[in-house]
Image 1 (cartoon, rainbow, N blue to C red):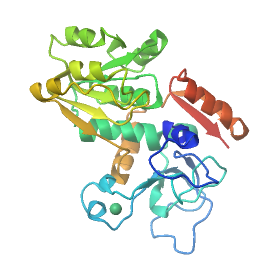
Image 2: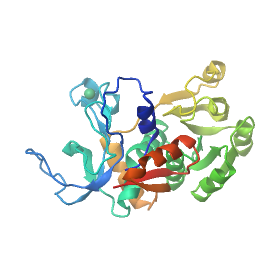
Image 3: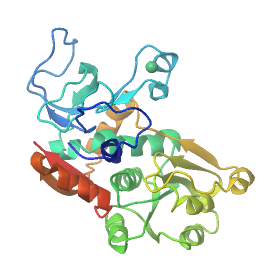
Image 4: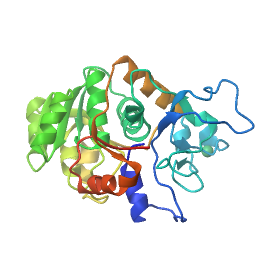
Length: 308
Ligand SMILES: [Zn+2]
Protein backbone atom coordinates (compact mmCIF):
# COMPACT_ATOMS: atom_id res chain seq x y z
CA UNK A 1 0.00 0.00 0.00
CA UNK A 2 1.10 3.63 -0.33
CA UNK A 3 0.59 6.45 2.16
CA UNK A 4 -1.53 9.50 1.51
CA UNK A 5 -2.24 12.70 3.39
CA UNK A 6 -5.68 11.22 4.14
CA UNK A 7 -3.94 8.62 6.32
CA UNK A 8 -1.89 11.26 8.10
CA UNK A 9 -4.91 13.49 8.75
CA UNK A 10 -6.90 10.49 10.04
CA UNK A 11 -3.95 9.56 12.28
CA UNK A 12 -3.89 13.10 13.68
CA UNK A 13 -7.69 13.11 14.11
CA UNK A 14 -8.12 16.13 11.84
CA UNK A 15 -10.88 14.89 9.55
CA UNK A 16 -14.45 16.16 9.41
CA UNK A 17 -16.13 13.16 11.09
CA UNK A 18 -15.78 11.18 14.33
CA UNK A 19 -13.10 8.50 14.26
CA UNK A 20 -13.83 5.27 16.12
CA UNK A 21 -10.96 3.18 17.49
CA UNK A 22 -9.35 0.82 16.81
CA UNK A 23 -8.81 1.85 13.21
CA UNK A 24 -6.69 0.43 10.37
CA UNK A 25 -5.34 3.25 8.19
CA UNK A 26 -4.55 3.02 4.48
CA UNK A 27 -6.53 3.84 1.32
CA UNK A 28 -4.31 2.53 -1.46
CA UNK A 29 -3.82 -1.15 -2.13
CA UNK A 30 -2.70 -3.64 -4.73
CA UNK A 31 -2.46 -7.36 -4.16
CA UNK A 32 -3.75 -10.83 -4.87
CA UNK A 33 -7.36 -12.02 -4.49
CA UNK A 34 -7.37 -14.46 -1.56
CA UNK A 35 -11.05 -15.38 -1.29
CA UNK A 36 -14.60 -14.20 -1.96
CA UNK A 37 -17.55 -14.26 0.36
CA UNK A 38 -20.55 -16.50 -0.43
CA UNK A 39 -21.88 -14.18 -3.16
CA UNK A 40 -18.94 -13.46 -5.50
CA UNK A 41 -20.36 -11.68 -8.54
CA UNK A 42 -20.05 -13.07 -12.06
CA UNK A 43 -17.01 -11.75 -13.88
CA UNK A 44 -15.01 -10.95 -10.73
CA UNK A 45 -11.25 -11.59 -11.11
CA UNK A 46 -10.53 -15.20 -10.10
CA UNK A 47 -8.92 -16.09 -6.77
CA UNK A 48 -5.15 -15.78 -7.14
CA UNK A 49 -5.25 -12.93 -9.68
CA UNK A 50 -3.36 -9.65 -9.31
CA UNK A 51 -5.69 -6.74 -8.68
CA UNK A 52 -5.75 -3.03 -7.92
CA UNK A 53 -8.19 -1.72 -5.33
CA UNK A 54 -10.57 1.15 -6.10
CA UNK A 55 -10.58 2.87 -2.70
CA UNK A 56 -14.00 4.56 -2.69
CA UNK A 57 -17.33 3.08 -1.62
CA UNK A 58 -20.47 5.04 -2.59
CA UNK A 59 -23.88 4.34 -1.03
CA UNK A 60 -25.17 2.99 -4.34
CA UNK A 61 -28.74 4.15 -3.70
CA UNK A 62 -28.90 7.99 -3.85
CA UNK A 63 -29.64 10.21 -6.87
CA UNK A 64 -25.91 10.91 -7.35
CA UNK A 65 -25.10 7.20 -7.35
CA UNK A 66 -27.75 6.65 -10.03
CA UNK A 67 -26.53 9.66 -12.04
CA UNK A 68 -23.46 10.33 -14.18
CA UNK A 69 -21.12 11.24 -11.29
CA UNK A 70 -21.30 8.90 -8.28
CA UNK A 71 -18.45 10.86 -6.65
CA UNK A 72 -21.20 13.36 -5.76
CA UNK A 73 -22.67 10.75 -3.39
CA UNK A 74 -22.84 12.45 0.02
CA UNK A 75 -22.36 9.16 1.84
CA UNK A 76 -19.20 7.99 0.07
CA UNK A 77 -16.40 6.64 2.23
CA UNK A 78 -12.77 5.92 1.54
CA UNK A 79 -11.04 2.70 2.45
CA UNK A 80 -10.06 3.30 6.14
CA UNK A 81 -13.13 5.48 6.92
CA UNK A 82 -16.07 4.40 9.09
CA UNK A 83 -16.68 0.65 8.98
CA UNK A 84 -14.47 0.33 5.87
CA UNK A 85 -11.15 -0.81 7.36
CA UNK A 86 -7.93 0.27 5.65
CA UNK A 87 -5.13 -1.35 3.71
CA UNK A 88 -2.22 -0.98 6.14
CA UNK A 89 -2.48 -4.71 6.74
CA UNK A 90 -1.62 -8.07 5.18
CA UNK A 91 -5.29 -8.70 4.33
CA UNK A 92 -8.03 -6.24 3.43
CA UNK A 93 -11.74 -6.84 2.84
CA UNK A 94 -13.39 -4.80 0.08
CA UNK A 95 -16.56 -5.14 -2.01
CA UNK A 96 -15.93 -7.23 -5.13
CA UNK A 97 -16.82 -4.23 -7.36
CA UNK A 98 -13.82 -2.40 -5.86
CA UNK A 99 -11.22 -4.69 -7.42
CA UNK A 100 -10.01 -4.44 -11.00
CA UNK A 101 -7.20 -6.30 -12.79
CA UNK A 102 -3.72 -4.89 -12.13
CA UNK A 103 -2.11 -3.27 -15.21
CA UNK A 104 0.43 -5.69 -16.67
CA UNK A 105 3.18 -3.07 -16.95
CA UNK A 106 3.06 -2.06 -13.28
CA UNK A 107 4.37 -3.83 -10.18
CA UNK A 108 2.12 -4.14 -7.13
CA UNK A 109 4.07 -1.29 -5.48
CA UNK A 110 3.49 0.95 -8.51
CA UNK A 111 -0.17 -0.06 -8.73
CA UNK A 112 -0.61 0.86 -5.06
CA UNK A 113 0.03 4.48 -6.06
CA UNK A 114 -2.97 4.60 -8.41
CA UNK A 115 -5.99 4.62 -6.09
CA UNK A 116 -5.59 8.01 -4.46
CA UNK A 117 -2.82 10.21 -5.93
CA UNK A 118 -3.12 9.15 -9.55
CA UNK A 119 -6.91 8.89 -9.58
CA UNK A 120 -7.25 12.31 -7.94
CA UNK A 121 -4.83 13.83 -10.45
CA UNK A 122 -6.58 12.10 -13.38
CA UNK A 123 -10.01 13.48 -12.48
CA UNK A 124 -8.61 16.97 -11.84
CA UNK A 125 -6.80 17.13 -15.18
CA UNK A 126 -9.07 15.29 -17.60
CA UNK A 127 -12.55 15.42 -16.05
CA UNK A 128 -12.72 18.68 -14.10
CA UNK A 129 -10.32 20.82 -16.18
CA UNK A 130 -11.02 18.73 -19.33
CA UNK A 131 -7.47 19.38 -20.56
CA UNK A 132 -6.65 18.46 -24.15
CA UNK A 133 -3.25 17.90 -25.79
CA UNK A 134 -1.48 21.24 -26.26
CA UNK A 135 -3.18 23.00 -23.35
CA UNK A 136 -1.15 24.31 -20.43
CA UNK A 137 -1.31 23.44 -16.74
CA UNK A 138 0.46 24.65 -13.60
CA UNK A 139 0.95 21.92 -10.97
CA UNK A 140 1.41 23.43 -7.49
CA UNK A 141 3.42 21.34 -5.04
CA UNK A 142 4.86 19.28 -7.88
CA UNK A 143 7.02 17.14 -5.58
CA UNK A 144 4.30 15.38 -3.58
CA UNK A 145 2.41 12.24 -4.49
CA UNK A 146 -0.45 14.11 -6.16
CA UNK A 147 1.90 16.62 -7.80
CA UNK A 148 4.21 14.06 -9.38
CA UNK A 149 1.18 12.11 -10.61
CA UNK A 150 -0.29 15.25 -12.17
CA UNK A 151 3.01 16.13 -13.88
CA UNK A 152 3.40 12.61 -15.31
CA UNK A 153 -0.22 12.26 -16.48
CA UNK A 154 -0.43 15.74 -18.01
CA UNK A 155 2.92 15.39 -19.79
CA UNK A 156 1.94 11.96 -21.15
CA UNK A 157 -1.31 13.47 -22.46
CA UNK A 158 0.61 16.14 -24.41
CA UNK A 159 -0.08 19.09 -22.11
CA UNK A 160 2.46 21.85 -21.50
CA UNK A 161 3.30 21.38 -17.82
CA UNK A 162 4.54 24.08 -15.43
CA UNK A 163 5.77 22.49 -12.20
CA UNK A 164 6.01 24.59 -9.05
CA UNK A 165 7.87 23.75 -5.85
CA UNK A 166 9.99 25.48 -3.19
CA UNK A 167 12.75 22.92 -3.73
CA UNK A 168 15.16 23.13 -6.67
CA UNK A 169 15.81 19.38 -6.35
CA UNK A 170 12.10 18.67 -6.75
CA UNK A 171 11.88 21.07 -9.70
CA UNK A 172 14.75 19.27 -11.44
CA UNK A 173 12.99 15.95 -10.81
CA UNK A 174 9.70 17.33 -12.18
CA UNK A 175 11.51 18.40 -15.37
CA UNK A 176 12.84 14.86 -15.70
CA UNK A 177 9.24 13.58 -15.41
CA UNK A 178 8.11 15.66 -18.37
CA UNK A 179 7.39 19.14 -17.04
CA UNK A 180 8.39 21.78 -19.59
CA UNK A 181 8.82 24.69 -17.14
CA UNK A 182 10.09 24.74 -13.56
CA UNK A 183 8.64 27.53 -11.42
CA UNK A 184 10.21 28.38 -8.04
CA UNK A 185 7.31 28.77 -5.59
CA UNK A 186 7.10 32.21 -4.01
CA UNK A 187 6.13 35.77 -4.81
CA UNK A 188 7.58 35.74 -8.34
CA UNK A 189 5.99 32.43 -9.36
CA UNK A 190 2.97 33.94 -11.13
CA UNK A 191 5.24 36.39 -12.99
CA UNK A 192 7.34 33.46 -14.23
CA UNK A 193 4.25 31.64 -15.54
CA UNK A 194 2.88 34.76 -17.22
CA UNK A 195 6.18 35.60 -18.92
CA UNK A 196 6.38 32.04 -20.32
CA UNK A 197 2.82 32.30 -21.71
CA UNK A 198 3.04 35.74 -23.41
CA UNK A 199 1.20 37.24 -20.43
CA UNK A 200 -1.84 34.97 -20.92
CA UNK A 201 -1.49 32.47 -18.05
CA UNK A 202 -2.21 28.75 -18.04
CA UNK A 203 -5.44 26.96 -18.97
CA UNK A 204 -5.61 25.20 -15.61
CA UNK A 205 -3.96 25.12 -12.20
CA UNK A 206 -3.76 21.94 -10.11
CA UNK A 207 -4.01 23.17 -6.53
CA UNK A 208 -3.64 21.05 -3.39
CA UNK A 209 -1.30 23.15 -1.27
CA UNK A 210 -3.60 25.99 -0.22
CA UNK A 211 -2.48 29.09 1.66
CA UNK A 212 1.12 29.36 0.41
CA UNK A 213 0.20 28.93 -3.28
CA UNK A 214 -3.34 30.29 -3.74
CA UNK A 215 -2.29 33.85 -4.65
CA UNK A 216 -0.09 32.43 -7.42
CA UNK A 217 -2.84 30.10 -8.64
CA UNK A 218 -5.30 33.01 -9.01
CA UNK A 219 -2.74 35.17 -10.82
CA UNK A 220 -1.31 32.44 -13.07
CA UNK A 221 -4.61 31.14 -14.50
CA UNK A 222 -5.59 32.60 -17.86
CA UNK A 223 -8.76 34.63 -18.42
CA UNK A 224 -11.58 32.08 -17.96
CA UNK A 225 -9.12 29.41 -16.83
CA UNK A 226 -9.73 26.74 -14.22
CA UNK A 227 -8.27 26.28 -10.76
CA UNK A 228 -8.97 22.72 -9.66
CA UNK A 229 -8.68 22.21 -5.90
CA UNK A 230 -8.28 18.77 -4.35
CA UNK A 231 -6.59 19.58 -1.09
CA UNK A 232 -5.18 22.22 1.20
CA UNK A 233 -2.27 20.45 2.83
CA UNK A 234 -0.67 23.72 4.00
CA UNK A 235 -3.77 25.64 5.05
CA UNK A 236 -7.37 25.91 3.84
CA UNK A 237 -8.13 29.62 4.24
CA UNK A 238 -6.00 31.84 2.02
CA UNK A 239 -7.31 35.32 1.08
CA UNK A 240 -9.76 34.44 -1.71
CA UNK A 241 -8.85 37.33 -4.07
CA UNK A 242 -12.47 37.36 -5.29
CA UNK A 243 -12.00 40.42 -7.51
CA UNK A 244 -9.58 38.55 -9.72
CA UNK A 245 -11.86 35.50 -9.73
CA UNK A 246 -14.94 37.31 -11.06
CA UNK A 247 -13.22 39.92 -13.20
CA UNK A 248 -11.10 37.32 -14.97
CA UNK A 249 -13.99 34.81 -14.92
CA UNK A 250 -11.93 32.06 -13.34
CA UNK A 251 -13.55 28.70 -12.62
CA UNK A 252 -12.74 27.31 -9.19
CA UNK A 253 -13.55 23.58 -9.27
CA UNK A 254 -13.49 21.29 -6.26
CA UNK A 255 -12.46 17.70 -6.93
CA UNK A 256 -12.26 14.60 -4.77
CA UNK A 257 -10.95 11.19 -5.80
CA UNK A 258 -12.66 9.78 -8.93
CA UNK A 259 -15.29 7.31 -10.08
CA UNK A 260 -14.76 3.60 -10.75
CA UNK A 261 -14.94 4.12 -14.57
CA UNK A 262 -12.36 6.92 -14.21
CA UNK A 263 -10.14 4.52 -12.22
CA UNK A 264 -10.41 1.93 -15.00
CA UNK A 265 -9.59 4.58 -17.65
CA UNK A 266 -6.64 5.77 -15.55
CA UNK A 267 -5.17 2.25 -15.31
CA UNK A 268 -5.52 1.78 -19.06
CA UNK A 269 -3.90 5.18 -19.74
CA UNK A 270 -0.96 4.46 -17.39
CA UNK A 271 -0.50 1.01 -18.94
CA UNK A 272 -0.70 2.34 -22.54
CA UNK A 273 1.76 5.19 -21.93
CA UNK A 274 4.03 3.06 -19.67
CA UNK A 275 3.93 5.68 -16.92
CA UNK A 276 5.88 4.56 -13.84
CA UNK A 277 4.86 6.22 -10.57
CA UNK A 278 7.71 7.82 -8.65
CA UNK A 279 8.42 5.96 -5.41
CA UNK A 280 10.37 7.92 -2.83
CA UNK A 281 10.95 5.11 -0.35
CA UNK A 282 9.66 1.66 0.58
CA UNK A 283 9.20 0.43 4.15
CA UNK A 284 8.25 -2.93 5.67
CA UNK A 285 5.01 -2.91 7.69
CA UNK A 286 6.73 -2.72 11.13
CA UNK A 287 8.42 0.55 9.99
CA UNK A 288 5.16 2.26 9.06
CA UNK A 289 5.82 4.96 11.67
CA UNK A 290 8.99 6.03 9.81
CA UNK A 291 6.99 6.29 6.59
CA UNK A 292 4.46 8.56 8.32
CA UNK A 293 7.30 10.69 9.70
CA UNK A 294 8.71 11.16 6.23
CA UNK A 295 5.25 12.06 4.87
CA UNK A 296 4.89 14.63 7.65
CA UNK A 297 8.35 16.08 6.90
CA UNK A 298 7.34 16.98 3.34
CA UNK A 299 10.84 16.02 2.19
CA UNK A 300 9.72 13.09 0.05
CA UNK A 301 9.56 13.20 -3.75
CA UNK A 302 6.83 10.87 -4.97
CA UNK A 303 5.09 8.12 -3.06
CA UNK A 304 5.89 6.37 0.22
CA UNK A 305 5.24 2.64 0.01
CA UNK A 306 4.65 0.12 2.73
CA UNK A 307 5.04 -3.48 1.64
CA UNK A 308 3.70 -6.54 3.44
ZN1 LIG B 1 -24.92 7.54 -3.04
